[in-house]
Image 1 (cartoon, rainbow, N blue to C red):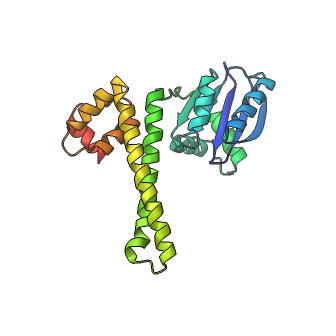
Image 2 (cartoon, rainbow, N blue to C red):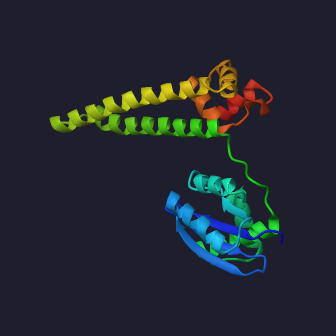
Image 3 (tube, rainbow, N blue to C red):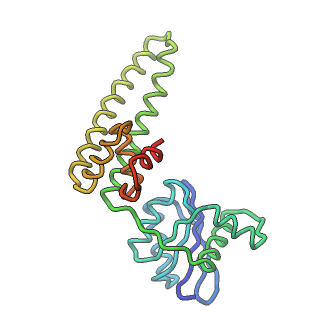
Length: 233
């Protein structure tokens, strides 16, 4: 073992850890999935004398993004792996008990045994675009939720007025966020160039182009416009 292994079982509000030292000794810990929790983690790792380690966690949407970036910026090796790989590894070990603590240890042992490839964070401008696009999509979803009862008819005047006021606010925020997305893309030459390429593909709207740019770091990996369009659905 060249580095200690850190298995992370991530959830929305917390993350469980299992640190396997070079000696093979195990240490378990639980932290809140917050900036404060990340600071506590760094302090704990220092006490454990784990200055350089290989951390591993499952790809679980957005829950682990901030923690992965924090560990990467602290010069640790970070691997973000497909949950199916962990499940297969658990099956090979005949592991049936499932708790957050056990899962963290399983992920740490997977990290030791498989040495998964290092994760590389998205460039800062893409991460910012991703956050803007997610905010835009969230606002669209909120607008749909408010439009549904309005279209079915609200008989109480004060409730209808409240919904209409909220819809007005949401429409303003949607427009403002859309403008922020376009400004952000245009202020980064790489994003602007790829956006123009996407705009040239029939059937891909500007909002779809922004979504693709936030999820695909380099559209030139696709050999044709048809492949990009297929990815966009």
